[in-house]
Image (cartoon, rainbow, N blue to C red; front, side, top):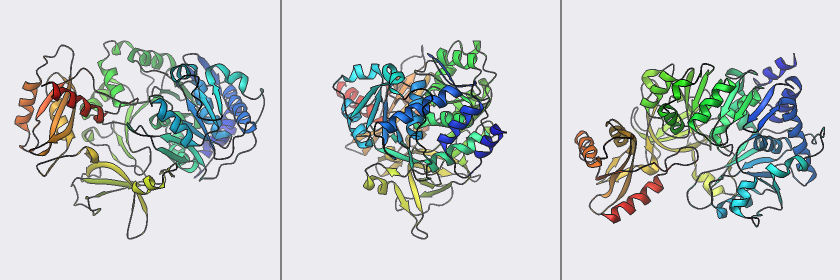
Length: 517
């Protein structure tokens, strides 16, 4: 009956993550809750460690609503720290490992953290002098001895809906990334319904993107809310993922597009048994229609693409296995979510016309930490009813069936000779050419046109490296205002830790290559 009560609680409008962790610890004590390359924790052990770390956080000065910074490789200890911070009444503040020393120090200070949990590898990289907050704990060496004694319990914490749950720092390439604050209510709205409808205590979820990324939360938090098991891969490799999925009987997973692509290209892919897979998610970067189709054909289970932002706003869902004729879209707004398409003057555009996407839902950030100006800029206020909407930063159009097709990022639109050029249109044409594995288009300064499209391709192994011939064939299919001025073949596309294409780095590459001509 207790398990039924916990499952029923997931249907409530608002509930407590800490209460669910404690509850599953009692009901599913011997079942595995967390697993990584070093071992596993049962639900009883997991709940106990969350309590012990939370108790020590409270006894060493953590105040309600104060951040706990975490920096290091993903694994069991990282997961315990994340949820212990929440259990203690604090705010989990995972820091991006790929950031510079200066950025990391600035993020830790911005978060307001009293504690920094860092692993030995990252501390060795940054140096012993890296001490941006008052208390530093090397969690892969000191955590067992640092946490409170076995059986200890933290003081009660009953979160209010508006209490902050976590801060996710954006992956900005310059300056200090912005801290995106999510409340307990937002996280519950995002994941409780998913945990109730999609997961179950028998679920075996597999994560292979970092726990400091909002992407990972899609498979991590709802699986635990449902009392399931999460296996954490610290560093993705195709064979490592395939072996782990087969060995653990993975039922649910989250992968970003570049990971799906690498799996499809893995020569030994067919040698592994993935028959336990029931549902796969994808988010965080453009997911080409052809790749979706290949994943549907070759990997068991359903496939859901999620479109949205860490900041919230509208979330669109594409149930690719149900709508194979809509793979060029990102689906339709999720229940309770609203989408509008506006022009550059914030006026509605005609149906089917590309425009700036804005959205709203109960799943919206509380704001950027310590940046009220940036928070205001990210929002749009409806002049008629005063409702607040998030500017999604994308240009898209909505078809007659309500499916959303992305045209490109607003900041990436190329304005050449007064005409708007959407890189995605050119990239899709490049991908049609034989031997082209990946394609990207950016705008570069032009004296004649203001900007001009410049393309990049990564060729399949063994494909003839003839960018000029590829460009000639593609330009013959494009309109005069769209044509590429140059096409470069590069060995690898620059990407972030979750597979997002870094067009700022492509611009630097283009500048270097053009200077060599």
